[in-house]
Image 1 (cartoon, helix red, strand yellow):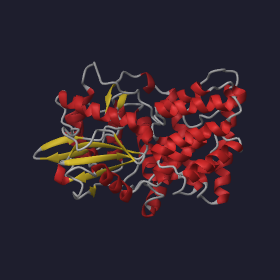
Image 2 (cartoon, one colour):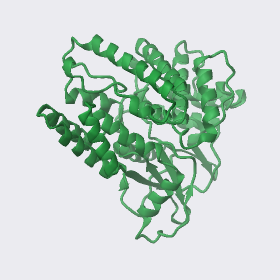
Image 3 (cartoon, helix red, strand yellow):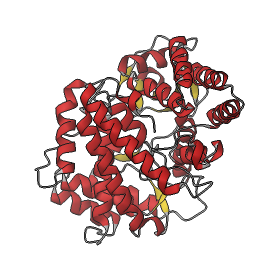
Image 4 (tube, helix red, strand yellow):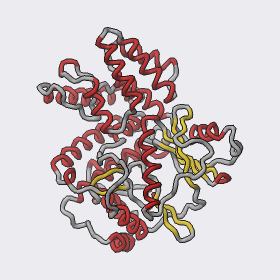
Length: 433
């Protein structure tokens, strides 16, 4: 894996150490899998390995498992690989840069830099990485407002007041109160199909009597509108900042987890979904030593996950990011929202997020007891639940760290989280994010 370009903004000494660490892992993986002609590469190290017999479609298998890439880009990569084999590396990378640049905000200078990378022998994965990373790390509140303003141009809400409801990460939430709408703005186009699934799942939940924030019935534009490489979806606006209770969350999760098939077309649980992109974004906001610690921790958690019972557990529909912050309460009704991490997997995954909130002190003992009573099952004593809680805390930290380059005021809090994950003996005074 060529990771040096992701660390260009970190101190040179730390960048070099981390690059050596990642390169060492890459070589170990190649040596381990050299005998397998078509072994798919793991999502974090997917790249072209000429001597290992790994071809473009194997490369894509690793990518699509982590929701990093869409069908259009797959076509670009396969075209690039064909061009590369025919000695036309420059054309292949130019085409990839052009296609990705037109939708993810890359400019001519980015394309030229990627072509130079091709001449230096780096693969197309670097091109895709760099464009998507630039799209993510430059995505802030001002750009989210500008995207929604452009989306509304030509509609009767063109001059409506807009409000960013929370700090953007890989998406932003912008209220348009005059229209009774909320725009969710996805930072990178590669998440388009996941955003489509989010719309479909929310509609399905409503049809099953699960109270959710609904997609807009009459949006001012088409859903999944593409604006300057960002993706916009439209949702009903609930004029409240009041969150639901832990008890209400327990009731909603019980409804969701007990739904019988047939289910919507959801992906299987991938514990590392979005993690790779978030760590890449974090590289320019936190010290390289902290980033290396997160990489090490991810490897350790992945080994524990692979050896655990969880991958073989029966599946249910999961919310994927279950906490009271993903609920809204209005007129006595509590609505579940934010389904972009929804998938099929063991129901304990969602419960582990709530247990994590309780262990951090974000829920009191009384609130957690109310959650358990509403959900109908106390999983605190499950022998293997600690692994899921550890993964949930790791994922929350990666999401928080991905914001650090845009929000320098949170860097100390991010570093505290990382330190307490790496040394469990430290007290976890995590600030709510």
